[in-house]
Image 1 (cartoon, rainbow, N blue to C red):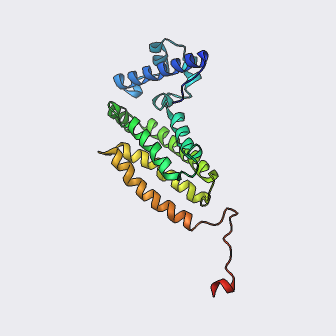
Image 2: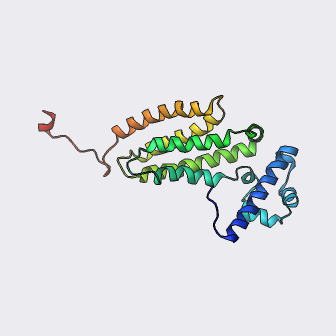
Image 3: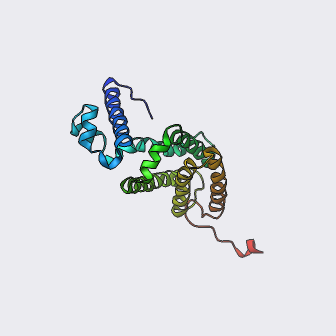
Length: 209
């Protein structure tokens, strides 16, 4: 997460984090469905309107780093060093996400998510949004990117790599295993893609021999 620089921004970020931490503690103590926004506001000593100024919904309280994760994936594409290959940069970012989400104390949170239909639905919508943002970044990246369908497919594979790896017995090894397959698919997609103008040059009779 990017650290806020100004005093006002730091205070706002601290309030947001306090609300999120309070909500998660209450959800784990009492159960997600048993806790309402008013409960969170009262426990965090803020107004209900303050909660909604930071989080659009109750589900968003659980996924409070959603936007940071999305930005991290996009920046892995757009901010990588010149001539650095795309997928190693994404693999590194996914390793960071998995380390963050598979750390100590994460199991009860993921159990809560998987047992709540509302949270599962929210997570799926979040993943679809992350996929679209990442696909757009990949398609706009310099170089011979494949067509939009291939970019969306690769982006979805990357998002799924994170989801699958965080639940594995060895998350880091799972990331590497899945990215071997993603890299193979990317190589095929790039080798069979048209030129940047979208049209593969036709071979002349002379070229065909």
